[in-house]
Amino acid sequence: MLLLEGKPIKEKIENETLNIVHELRKKNIIPHLAVILVGNREDSEIYVSIKQKRAHELGMDFSLYRFDEEEKEDSVIETIKYLNNDKDVHGIIVQLPLPENFDTNNVLSAIEDKKDVDDLKETGHFAAPSPSAIVEIIDEYKIDTHGKKIVILGRGRLIGKPLEKILKARKYDVEAIDTETKDLLKKVKDADILIAATGTPGVVTEELIKKDSVVISVGDEVNFERVKDHVEALTPTKGGVGPITVSLLLKNVAIAANS
Image 1 (tube, rainbow, N blue to C red):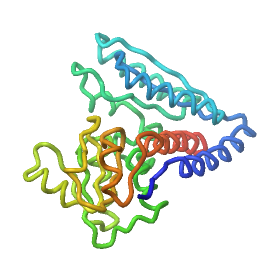
Image 2: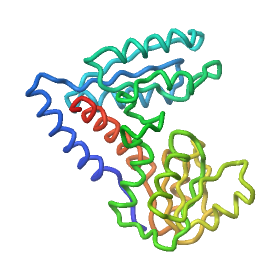
Image 3: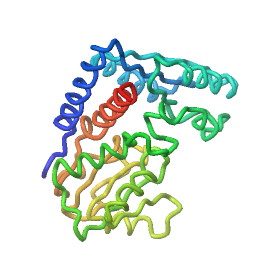
Image 4: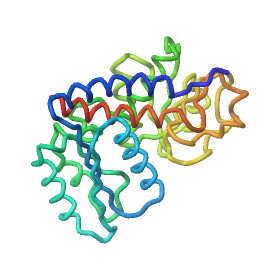
């Protein structure tokens, strides 16, 4: 079984980013990422802390703007507009998911295109980090896609939908599915390459997958111990897609500061 580790890809991307940051610092420009965090979800807190740690390690500035769940949406949007006008801030992200009382599209639309380093508005100014991380794994490990059926389990705005678009542009045979998809379990079982992006821990087990398939788990959707002996290649429980995603996000910030 080939272990699809993210570390070598992450390190390559971070070296590229460090070079950009080094050149920018010669011009007294420090790439700066601002993060909007609403509520106190434990997983969101973890993701934000990881981004902050890596940003500082790469020589970047990082600002965190916290809001209570009960905060008015207008207050968050006003903060985003303030950051849009701050020339020293080069990237803005809103940590998702937002509380149910927020209109996610409305909040995200407030981010200026040239600072939308997560590409959640799909303007194409930047490569979307999460989907791009999966493409990096496919390319780095030379996963054979010719004549293969690729299934993305999950159709969310962060990964499923944009990844399907990227892979279709490559002329791959790909379909993003979710709980509303007809014959969902059959489609998962028929996948030569399965990309699990549901956000539900341990949902993918050996009974659901094709023997000797390639399985990429965006988070901890795959039960590693139960699946590892049934696949040709598999991402680790930790150190797979996640670290690459963060490195690509911060590279986007450096690119934004350099533009």
